[in-house]
Amino acid sequence: MNDNIIFIVYSQTMNEADFRRLQQVLSDPKKIVITTHRNPDGDAYGSSLGLYLFLKKSGHQVTVVSPNDCPEFLKWLPGEDQIVLFEPAPDKGKEILGEADIVFTLDFNAFHRLGEVMEVAMKEISPVFVMIDHHQQPDDFADFQYVDATMSSTSEMVYQFIDKMGQLDLIDQDIASCLYAGILTDTGSFRFPATTSHTHRVVADLLEKGANNSSIYNKIHDVNTYNRMQLLGRALDNMVVLERFHTAYITLSQSELNRYNFQRGDTEGFVNYALSLKNVMFAAIFIEDKKQKIIKISFRSVGEFSVNEFSRNHFGGGGHVNAAGGKSDLSLSETVKKFVEILPSLTNELSLS
Image (tube, rainbow, N blue to C red):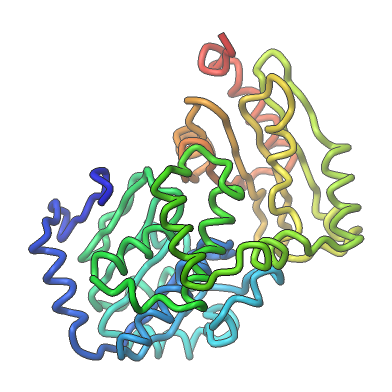
């Protein structure tokens, strides 16, 4: 197993005996809820549904409760139609959470990632919390924390979790497909640095268990609409390159989103176009959200420049070294102005030499 994996129980390092305690907790049928972050991506739903199907096969009563809905390109995932959406039906969501013996929190490590509505509900319950996550600096809310920031994805960690339970034989085609989809999306189709030889060994086993790699890739990536392609064209037209700081950024206003009939997930991957430019090592996209009255931000980097640290310090977010998110309560123009004004202080860190 990966030596970097950290198990924590009540903020103390968890040894194999501690993990066996968790295995004992799961040894008889429980009411289990699985949750993931707001605006779920491929890894959020891939890991959640993979664990959901596994725990159901293990005899538990399991429900996935998601703060809000996923993009259309994830609707094919096995079990997606069974997910309960919290924000459209908070009373139902609270009832399900309140009856849970165990709540698994996947692909996030702080309650605020659930959004304001579900965050409040989560703070009011007291089940056994089990965190499975690969983001840095987790909050201290879980009874069991399975955290490894070096992992490619939470879906890879769910595979590891099943392995630790000694039940890899329970992984069938549906479970394998969910976990493969999560790993595929969070590794940028196996391009990102966190993709390791172990990741590929996990993927090989998932393929052997029935995951159809070409079909899954096509379902996730070959879903462009005319409006999305037009929106991408607008985003690229809005791109600004700051050569001195080896930085590029993209802006999209609410009016531009409306013009091209924006649907959830349409801007997925847009920031990577900025990062792909020659001599660019730091990229950002700023997307106006009038409904939430915020600017949503995605940061990407190459090399050692930590967008996790940058986002935490300046835009109330976080994530990974090379991929992070944030937000701003300022206007779109004011947010970009703030971003640009920070860059001179990072001249040395953003040097290619």
